[in-house]
Amino acid sequence: DWIADLDRFLQDNRDRLKHFELGRRPDLVFEPNAYAYLVERVGTSIHAADPSFDLLIGPLADGSGNWLAGIDPARLTPYIHGLAVENPKKLEEAAARLQRDYPGMVLWLHAAPQGSDVAAFARLLYEARVAGFQRVFAGSGAPPDIVALLLNLALALPARFEPDPAPTVKASMQDGRAPAWVGYFADPLSSERALLLPEAPSGPPALEPATIARLRVIDLASGADLPAQRGAPAAAGPLLMRFLVVQEPRAAPETIGVTEERRLTAEEIIARYRAFEA
Image (cartoon, rainbow, N blue to C red):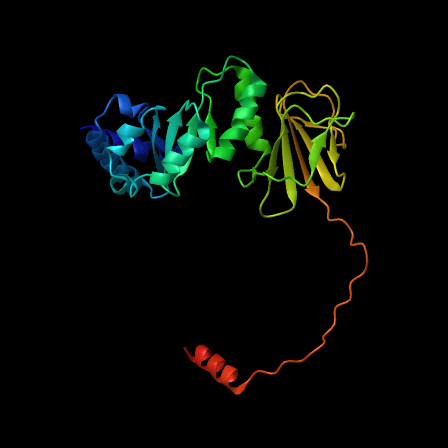
């Protein structure tokens, strides 16, 4: 039967597998209860083969909210790692709806590129991250320029970077104007920051204020590192700039001293001793 075939496939390919999406547009093929049963059976087989395997629902259509509401989330959450959606018209609304019913789940986005507009797709990648999608896929028929952008951005920008709504360092053009659009990222674990320029600038942008170090500039069309300098060199396609924010020196020295010594009361000593014994 098909379960036995699935089990054999998992065993034969377990070293090459990690993530599974169950169905494309299952909302058009299955009744909600039938799909929930399928998730239970497939999820059981996948996790029996390897508990580290991840199962995701979808990708679902943009208008599949009522269909998904026909399945009790309690039936799915023991088996799935996340959900995927396809071409939602409003990214934030789609993500918010899924996060409300499936909190903590990973969200993937399948987005069909609009022709070969690399700059528009680069902006979509950033907006998807802002909305809460962790991964974006362009499909097997995507133009080579779009595929290169996806690959090079994934290699150049680690997943730990998050959209930065209040950047401390911003890009500006030589005449003081702001670029048409910039996506800002921050590493929550360090002072490293990054910015995404979807279109190759007509002139080298500057980073203001210029208190940065270890600047790295990546051409996302080729994945090549460009000569690092405060103004990004010319490139054929989107750019990613990564750098460390350097703390400004303090205006005046500070003096720290002990002005008072406080002794523990008898009650505090007894309370700490009892806490230690517990």
